Image (cartoon, rainbow, N blue to C red; front, side):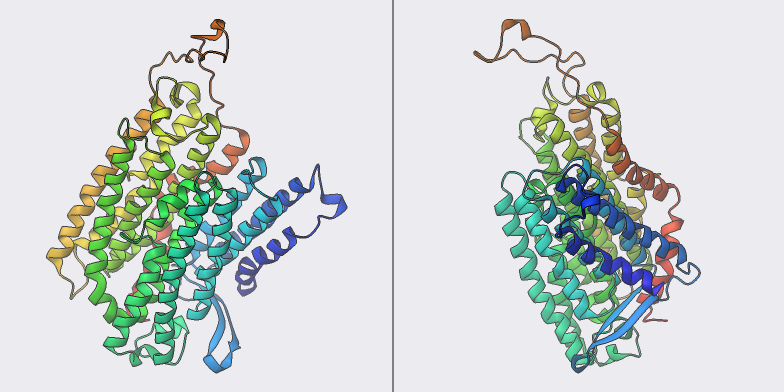
Length: 535
């Protein structure tokens, strides 16, 4: 088991190096580009297989115990160790990361975004996977910071080199926001390490361990510093403004990974570091975190409503990016409640958001490839997408993803948001219940607004204008009168590789919605122990 976990973390890095080397003569295929794309699918497939084997070998009777552990001294003078391990909190995120990266590599094999060398693309994709997997697997604060930072450079180049309009400005905004937040976070991590004498997360999470040496003032300062860095990545309002630009400019697979796994690194840090290591400081700041989360839920929904209205010229990718601000607000609200119910809801919502929003960004990217635009007014015009008529399977899947995202019972999006609000209904002792009831009410209003804008998206994009769509008459010099009023060409429906890349996400969305105990059975014992000081 420990070798499996080490392989899951290390194999993508080795694969990134291999992607930059010349392909052996017998494996080149039709072109070097095809060979390196096949290499990416192979490596991510092996990593996914290793992650699934890790999940199969996991002791499900004791999900609160750290398993598959590796603990090797790295920098003895600072007591920094190569400490790896997984429990019921981190295992689902490891599997989700491996799955989404494999699906992105598979999709890119058939539909590579326009940009520089495929070698660089595959190497960056694998480096991004390695950093994300390491973030969920390491148990040392300094290693967590290194892994947390590893993902920034690959994502910057994926946006800046393979993105669309405005890619340079969006990439710079992404890197500046996240780097500045990380610098502040590093100060908080160093403060904990210096004051406690260790950077080991497991030791720090126990009540009778080094955490006892952290005074109330130290915990306040540490939570403030660490929380800022994690809040930028989460993204918490008002530190979210980098996200819509990054999503709008990023290539399809970049948006999928950014929403599906990178945002989870911030919320995971709150659960793994802030809650168990600095509980007194977290309790002081929890009401403020909950308030900002509730504002983010309302703000994200209102921004989406503004984008979807007729004549606003809203971008569908930008709308889904703003929806992530709202959905991640539920995650942060559940964490801020500091209760097992709320934290379990936050972890469930993390996975649900990764599945559903990953599918949405896949679909919107494919829609842009088919129509040449993600402008909602263009997609909803009389010659717009009208997916139900032009590409019924594509339209049906987009409607399914939208309905799942609005949190309808029976699909994955429902359970996390409901449990997060239950946590706010009865927060931890010492937190103001009237304040959290207000935040819960705002979150409930956010669910209604979410349903409103997502149903409007389905209405405008899937139904389009009129059933009998006709192509507009060509402008002077663009064609002859014989083409005027001709039926608009049908859009290509789902291709085989799209079925392969998107079916697992849709199936898991249904499975998680119908069988939430499969995930909650993993997270709940680990959360109970984490909040109980290791008991």
